[in-house]
Length: 102
Image (cartoon, rainbow, N blue to C red):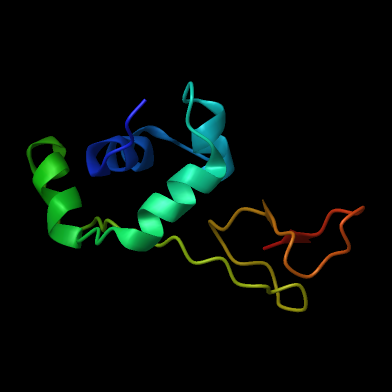
């Protein structure tokens, strides 16, 4: 299977909770996490591309915002952040244990 920008944008739009590359790879036949990661490192995905794909689905409102952020920061010593979910990170943990970050 060929992986494209549109595939990634559609995944971001349709995934209500888990936005990780591992989750995406688990839902695609013949596409690994590493393959998606290499693709995204070499591809320029602009906000315009995403906006062009969703603009007709958005109902403008002065009381609403759309935020896209794929940043995962280690905040283990911080207070809970409203609307933020815990996500697994292997960066700071030994290979045989799990580490969850807010």
